[in-house]
Length: 138
Image 1 (spheres, rainbow, N blue to C red):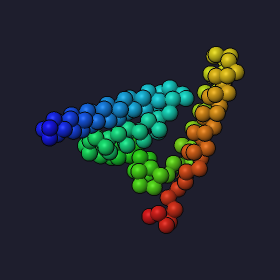
Image 2: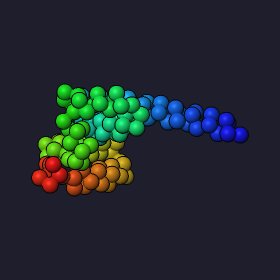
Image 3: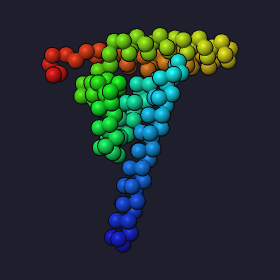
Image 4: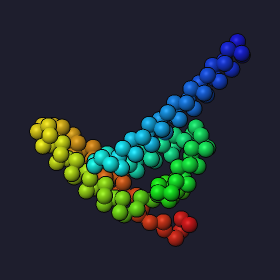
């Protein structure tokens, strides 16, 4: 009986690791696409990838934290939960553009209002986060 439970534990451990690795790489892929596609967020996918890699691969977690372009943003997020003011402004502007694009593409008031509600909640959360590292957090 003990051998069976140990086997199940090992299988679950490795499945979890590979699922998190896969999630991390999918999010890195979406973040890369988000660099070129307006309205597709980059930062949130990188934050999810950072979390997934932290749980599954020290190597890829360190790679993201030391990335030339995204490393500083992700280090600030991981250590202080800070989102720069420029990123917040860009996010809100892109959210507004996406609402207009979706509204004029689908011309459906229910889709538009649903999107407005979701994006308002996301914006409220992100805007509530600090923009700078305060002195007492250093």
